[in-house]
Amino acid sequence: MNDFANRTPVRHTHAPMSKRFYITTAIDYVNGQPHLGHAYEKVITDVIARTRRSLGEDVFFLTGLDEHGQKVQQAAVAEGKNPQVYCDALAEDWKAFAKKLELTNDDFVRTTEPRHKQFVQAILSRLHADGQFYQETYEGFYSTKEETFLTEKDRLPDGTFDPAYGEVVRLKETNYWFKLKAHQQWLIDYIEANPSFVQPDYRRNEVLGFLKNNELEDLCISRPVARLNWGIPLPFDNDYVTYVWFDALVNYISIPAAHGDAIVLNSTNTQHSTLNTQPSLWPADIHVIGKDILKFHAVFWPIMLKAMGLPLPKQILVHGWWQKDGAKISKSTGNIVDPVAVIDEWGLDAFRFYVLRELDIGPDGNWTDAGFKSRYQAELANGLGNLVNRSLSMLKRYRNGVVPSLHDELAPDATKVIADTRALLGQCELQKALQTIWSLITRANQYVDQTKPFSLAKDPSQSVRLDQVLYNLVETCRILAVLLWPFLPGTAARINAQLGLSGSPDKFAAAVWGGLKPGHTIGEPAALFPRKDT
RNA sequence: CGCGGGGUGGAGCAGCCUGGUAGCUCGCAAGGCUCAUAACCUUGAGGUCCUGGGUUCAAAUCCCAGCCCCGCAACCA
Image 1 (tube, rainbow, N blue to C red):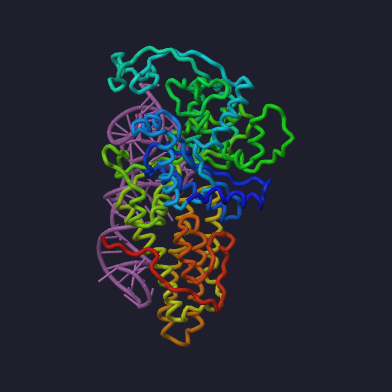
Image 2: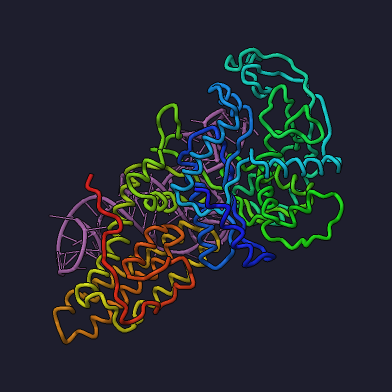
């Protein structure tokens, strides 16, 4: 379970000073159950991470948990537990969830860990010393029930507040604020000059629209301990804890710091350091997030980083939300998809395939059980599974499983698909990549129909031709395993095993025609995606 | 004047930025094949590309106006 951290030092020794491909998911609020949205974001990120590794890059993939805040505190108290004990138990569930999804994360951050808290305090001290914060007293309407300040927007048309807020009182509270508003124009200029910073483009436009039409307010970064004590104390004022921004977002750099990233460690010092500042992790290459937290990542976070003197992440990749059966996913109405239940029934790869194939990164999507079954049956069972099964079965039956001489009739098609897939993967076009890979499956199935190996097998004079056809088919299956590995790692491994190959098809470099050697004996064919007749 | 997303053959979608025979998956119909998970291959039927204007030699695609759906705040990715 806790093998994440152990991988990192090993990789470090290989390339200690070169920039690694650093990709993150948002960290999830621990006080909730993992659901489809969480699974989706993690799977997307995992596929990108696996893709980069397959292409030979040194990758660091981070995911984790946000564990501070009022809700956790309250929930823990309600159960009569210490908040840390409460979080520790939940964190095990989330780690199990990551394992269920077979994520290849290199670390798993928890914001209650000392390594994170220490870094947060260090960076807060540094920024405080730099004069980035100031204190101000805010007076406003406060809901004692919800423990939150209300704004004019929360007023009902008749001027009152919704009864759900309970008693609303005027309250004065002094807090620390981060100087955000001064950087508005800088951020606009930056986003305009860097079109790939926020993707897809329509999300970028949304951010620019927001920035151009609204005046930024400075960011309140603290809460009095009297109101919230489950948080990281401000190092310069123990009467406060830091609020979510300087806690959760900072995970993206606190973990690099914990791994010795020089550029991040330097940022906690006010004086210039002679440390080697050659980057190893930071800046992140991609932050994968949901559309709901776009503002935090595309507005607050860049300005925070600017204040810290750190470079900005290269890209914020924003995905959409899932609906189920055309309606909002809602626990209260029972309109939910339980990813664990789906995985248990259909297998992890079927789940990964559906969410990646059904929905492009960006738009909202719609989960339907019928659609899931349809894709499982049509694309996985009848498409991929059947092609591999029929190809290997014929080699087994007609040639006793021995790979014949090289032949390259399908090589041009395969090579084209390999090149296209590679280009699409480089752009994180996961859905289009899958469509492209499937075009090779379709091509191979057509090839069977056109060449009729089962007929050739009945005519001894066609033996050479049969060898040629069989080689093309089996070699195509081998290449498919390599192309599919980032998406369907288990299936790719099973194809490889059925081909009698050792090792994992996890290197894109192996996607070159002619990899299967004549004389090699394949393993036993077996259905990859058993048909489900229910 | 809330904001955002969308209206394309029976269903679900792509195309629209960078105008030029309307494409994909599923479903349906007919045919072929039998190696394979009753899977595979071919062909076909089926579309006022929401409406009305405009620009253009040419608009699903650009511009204007309108109509209609769907989300919107803490269960939230």
